[in-house]
Image (cartoon, rainbow, N blue to C red):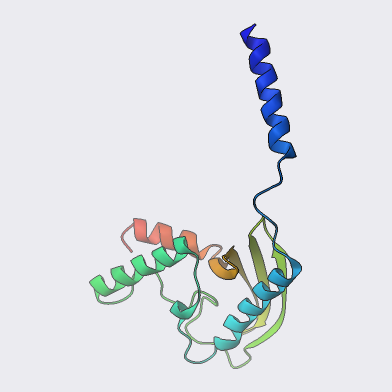
Length: 161
């Protein structure tokens, strides 16, 4: 008798969950367009005196950057971050130019913007974003040399920089 009751309860719960509207909504086309503009704006500011700390970061990545800053300050130099994370470079090339960008929704409240650049030759960078209270925040960055900036920080900070 217990098996039949359990089976009935499990079936009822499954039907209830699938019938309920999802609390999370997918990013709208306007929100995705805003994500693309935000990342393009970051890359437009990159040549010259760009401070990567001025970007809006998702809480987890912001905490890793703060931890790296503290590590660098304690050590009197560089900890893990030794380049501008958005280009994995210290300076931009004389040919630096944003050629194109695309945005793709990833899950309910995230997106990936991929930019095609010229920066010392053709390059492709991807920026993962989270939509938090109507604003986009960078959650990770992928460059040709660093597949995941967040993973690089986690690994480097775990090993002591």
